[in-house]
Every structure is written in C-alpha cells, then in structure tokens.
Amino acid sequence: MQFDIRSFFKNGKTPFTAQFLADLSGEDFDGSVVSEPVRCSFEAHSTLDGVAMTLRIEAKADSECARCLAPVHESYDFSVDYLVRERELDDPDFELPLNEKGCLDIRELAYQELIFKIPRVLLCSPDCQGLCPICGKRKAAGCTCQPADQAAPADARLSILKQLLS
Image (cartoon, rainbow, N blue to C red; front, side, top):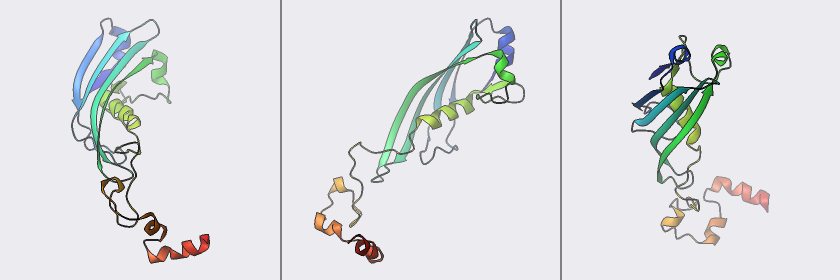
C-alpha cells in the first residue's frame, strides 16, 4: 500500500483514508510469527504544520515462552500518530519509509511499528517457573524433582563448576 505524500502536500484538501490487510507472514519478528494478515487502517489530513497521519494496527503473533517453551499467542491493537512537514521529505535522515518517488510505503511502516511492539522475550505468564534442569519438564506441569536433586549438576561435564564454587 502506497501513499503519495508529496502529492498530498500539494492537493490534499480532503482527508485520505485507507484500510487494508498486510501479509507479514514472511517477515522476521525475532522468533515470533505473524501468520494471519495484519489489519491496518491509515488516515491522513492536512494541518497548518504539515500532514497528520494515523496508522492503526491489529495483529496476532505466535511465539513460545522464553522460560518453558509453551506456545504463546498475543494480540496487538494500537495506533501510531505522525506529523510530517514538507521540508522533512528531502532530509536524508527522514525516518518513515519513502520510495524514490516520495510515496510512503504503509505496509513497511506497519511492519516497522509492529516489530517494535512485539517484545523480544515473551512469557506464558509473569510467574512462569520454566523448565526443570534435571528432568526437562515444565515445573508448573508436575516436575517431581526434589530441591536436593537440583543441587547436583544434570551433566557430569558441569561437575567442574561445582568444584570451583566449593
């Protein structure tokens, strides 16, 4: 989805609105997967200072818990506001994704905003205890190892660490 922002600065007397689905399933979200299309709505209108834009994103992401590897399903629904001044379009450090013709790539903008919204470390619950280092089961799902068992290293190669700490 492209928005010709340069043209909108010249002719944008009426607000611009668009709704679309963005397929971000092939994008990298650092371990999370966005398998369903992302629902986006975009609005732009002229102001005395420039062009005010709002991007609303509704997405679902799947991942696994960083502690116990259980599946985690999260939903995101948020809006981001932007104000662009015409002189900013020629700035080489302009942060919004423009192509060579000055069109704003709204799909790419949605990807950039969503990648910052999805946490790098997801947990199935704030009090997740993780996996048992002895048996490998989720601690919350019935690990029967005793605390004394957990003091011994599970791997004989790690016994040198225990000697160093003594």
